[in-house]
Image (cartoon, rainbow, N blue to C red; front, side, top):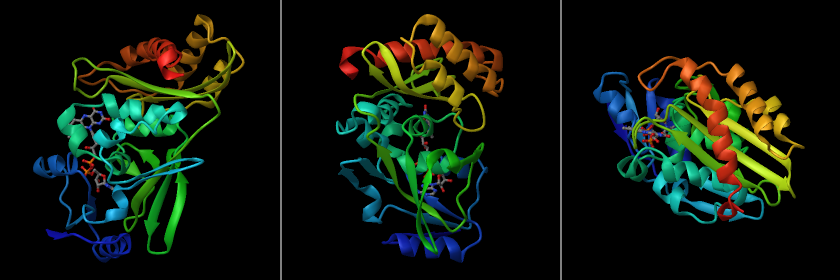
Length: 282
Ligand SMILES: Cc1cc2nc3c(=O)[nH]c(=O)nc-3n(C[C@H](O)[C@H](O)[C@H](O)COP(=O)(O)OP(=O)(O)OC[C@H]3O[C@@H](n4cnc5c(N)ncnc54)[C@H](O)[C@@H]3O)c2cc1C
């Protein structure tokens, strides 16, 4: 196996293009574990650690650009991620445990496309866009369109994620992420990310995404619409939750049965809505 440490995105892209089974190395939390277990055997590891631009966070009037190599720990501590953008910070604060939050990166979480991870779910709720660099330059893609299947993205083999744009979202919006896990620090059984904008007591805009309930983060526009124009009463949340549960395709595994996961969705949605509406989030 070859190992390379490019200094620029362009060098990184050229290295990926030069070797058929090359893979980016970000935090290494998952990739190295997969290599140890014999589930991955790249011909070349292209470490992204020396590419400085990938570790930057830049604020603009429209939102925040978060570099692919920014660690979860840094995202969790960045108070500029407020309002709707808070949903991403909330996921980074809660996921896994400190060792993983110190090591793993935002770009690695997207590149891994593990249906149990939480940053992808929060990014879908936040309507984030992903900047991708390849041999013909850079392009911006909606995060949702990047996730194709379990552990599979639409990235070309010579493309890498450079940064992620998290839009400020609607005026007055709030974001929250909630996870249910059997024990603290474990992957969740179900996770839910939510962005809400209220006008008085009425929901003006809603966007909900669910994790661990299908091959990619689950987003159902009809569930969002069921919440809009309502006071977010019990019945509204229950029906929006049922729309999500019906569209979900969870599996049975050690963290819960598919049936249990479907039951959890409306309950977690209810809790996430209450938490998002607490004054601390406003
Ligand atoms: C023990 C353990 C527990 C975990 N628990 C949780 C949890 O509870 N919740 C949760 O949300 N997540 C959890 N994770 C996952 C973690 O949050 C990260 O999603 C994951 O580790 C990948 O991030 P990384 O930076 O380590 O990426 P790596 O392991 O370095 O890479 C992962 C994959 O992404 C690709 N990749 C990396 N960077 C890029 C890039 N810039 N462009 C294109 N492709 C790229 C790599 O080639 C590789 O295929 C856990 C991970 C571990 C190991």
